Image 1 (cartoon, rainbow, N blue to C red):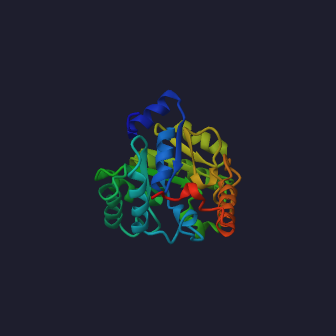
Image 2: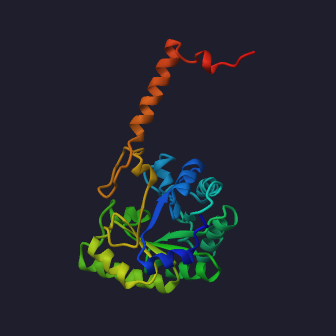
Image 3: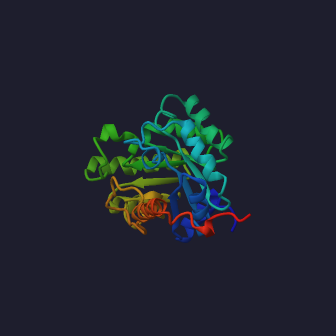
Length: 267
C-alpha cells in the first residue's frame, strides 16, 4: 500500500469514498491499524485520559504528545499521521503555535496537526498553513473548551449554535485546513456542512453523512470503562479479557502451574 497523502483524502471525497480514521498512542496499536488499512491515524490529546489517567485532556503537554507521536510514527508506513495540538500550545500566540506545531513535523515526522476551534483560531491556522504546516480543523464539541461548555454536550441544538457551526466550517476551509472533524454535532447539520465544503469532513458522534468517521481506539476495543459515549460502537471488550488473563496468570504463579517445564531453558 502506498503512503496516504492529503491529496488522496480530497480525491476520496470527490469519488464519494468514505475515509476511516482512528486514534493511536503506541507503536504496536499503530502498526495494527496501519496494516489493517486505516487512512488517518490521529495521535489524540485523548491520550491524557486513556493512557495518562488525567480527568480531562487539558493537562496534556507538547512534550508528552511528542513521545506518543514518535511511537506511532515508528511503525506506520501507510496511514497519514496527525498530531493533536494540546491545550495552550497554540492559543497564546501565533509564534508559539508555529514553534510547537513545527516540532510535531520536525521531531516526530507527523504529517500535520489538528487544532480545535473555529473563527477564533483563524489567525493561527492561516499562519501555520502559510509556513507549510498542514492543519486539520475541529469544531462542534471541542474537548479543550470543556470548562466553557460546562461538560461534554452535543452542539447545534440551538439556531445560534447551528449558524456558528456552518460559519466556522466555511471559514476554516477558506483559511486552508485540509479537513475538518465534527464532534457531537446533530446529523442534519453535519450533512449540510459536508455537502457545502470541498474539503473532507469527518464525524465523531455526528451521524452517517460525513465523508468519513473517526473514533478513539480504546473506545472501540472496550478498554476505557469510565465513560462510553452514545455514539461509540464497541467491537471488542478487551478490558474484561485482559483482566481475566491477568487473574489466570496470578493463579498460575500462586499454584506453581507457571512456570512449567516448557517455559524453562534447557542446559
